Amino acid sequence: MESKKELRKKILTIRNKMEKEEVENNSKLIMDKIVGLKAYKQSKVIFIYMDFNKEVMTSNLIRHMLAEKKRVVIPYTDTVNTLIIPSEITEEADLQLNSFGYYEPKEILPVSPEEIDLVIVPGVVFDKNLNRIGFGKGYYDRILKNLKPSAKKIAVAHDFQVLDEIPAEDHDVKMDMIITESSCYGKDIDL
Ligand SMILES: Nc1ncnc2c1ncn2[C@@H]1O[C@H](COP(=O)(O)OP(=O)(O)OP(=O)(O)O)[C@@H](O)[C@H]1O
Ligand SMILES: [Mg+2]
Image (tube, rainbow, N blue to C red; front, side, top):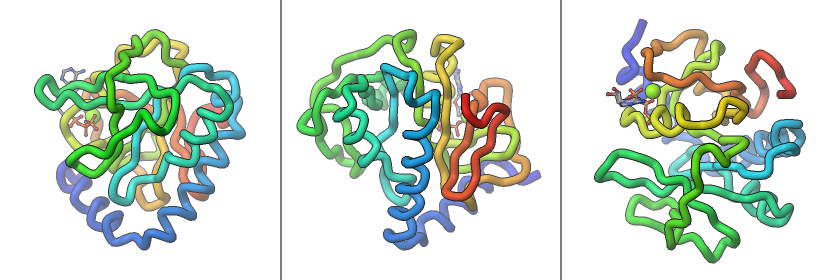
């Protein structure tokens, strides 16, 4: 089997070549599916990533969540300690573009992982057994393992990011569901 590193490189090369319009179309299909899930409807506190490059876009869903009065929590990346601080936002004005080119909270308003009901997880490569490979720093593995057991982890990706089988290590946290523009993977499709 190819290594995590090789797989990341291969899939990122494909993803980086995507047309903006394709990313937008896929993102709309994926976010519409999320809004229809019971797991989404029942969640009060949702932790969601801020997309960059050609990742599945989350901005429309975030707007929808704020309008629906969900509590919206986004990552603040503490690169010194290699950890994510989940931080609450209440309006779009709470966001600012960082030097990497994605949005972060202007101010850190920490939310304890136990408060989170649902996480929308980004990633680079996935497989049909719900394994995930990210950017290779373990940021998401570290935060996901601290969630309460009832919290759901839903990953989103473009179709080509989901392979049949990828390597997984003991510290890798599995997803509950992976949603792409044309498929849903997971034990229970409506969690
Ligand atoms: N729970 C953890 N506690 C401590 N270190 C961890 C944990 N999870 C992962 N790591 C470390 O992080 C490094 C990268 O892990 P891995 O290759 O799984 O990254 P990844 O899942 O692709 O990245 P990310 O989660 O940032 O998207 C590894 O060296 C691993 O030992
Ligand atoms: Mg991992």
